[in-house]
Length: 116
Image 1 (spheres, rainbow, N blue to C red):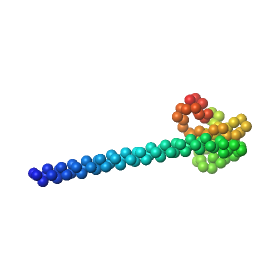
Image 2: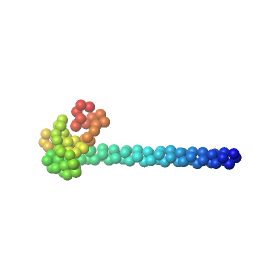
Image 3: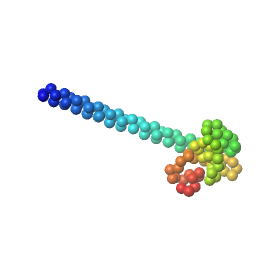
Image 4: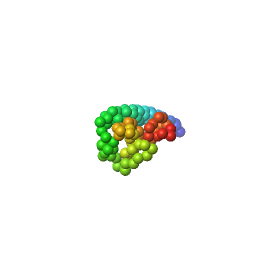
């Protein structure tokens, strides 16, 4: 009886240690994932802000052609934006790139989502 209680107590300590390790490991994993999502979102914002400045001297056709090289979807126009893959390109009347939008909107001010 004494050995049974000792073995059961030892197994309880071992399994609780395993669960504690699992919880800590999952917390660290989630922390790294959240940091990666944050960095990707900041990179996306930076690139979408910089793109119109980089494409200042390019025509609409040139910008769409360059963007189409990396897209596997058909280019289409909707609500005044040219959609190439997962990005929306808003051009001025003269044909210069004004802004770049992702294929989703967070409800903020975005020229390719005029309803928000």
